[in-house]
Image 1 (cartoon, one colour):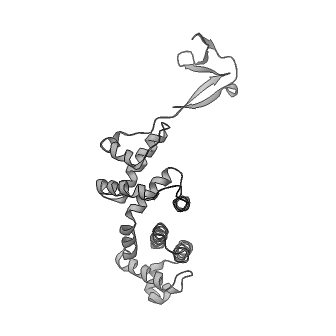
Image 2: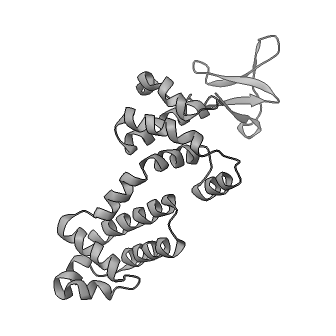
Image 3: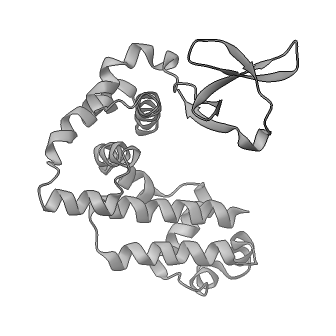
Length: 223
């Protein structure tokens, strides 16, 4: 339904307003309107067809300004406000996404920036360079995600600059495979496909047939 498409656009506007630092009242207005649209039983397109802009303003949480944006979307499948905000906050979106991959959400990022625990300006220049290199915010975020997945699987730290260094090999960057390996009383185990049995490897490397129960086996994550 178009309701979900519009709700998604309004939610994105709210997020970008939050990144930009707009007042909470305006941000909540967009989020509330999005929530009401998601729960609405009737198609917004039908409401507009029957009652026009007046009908849209009757939807809970939808005021004149948001109703006009819904009308714009119904007519053009776009919202100029969303495009404008997306352009204005491109650098901030990249910086925010980078910190999100490190487990720092937008609220915490802002608080740390105010307390100067994070020097925000330190990240804007490389974010701008990454935007120019990648050509779009979406591609910049995808590049950060690839580097983050690769680095985290190896317990490595990473910065936005790491994306530049790994740019030519992004397609080859894969998270290190994580597998579960069996142990019994701290000793590694191995399965013999030929004999259909489990064996415990002792300190000398000898295979000892496992006579216990599978519930006694311990599975450890190893990279």
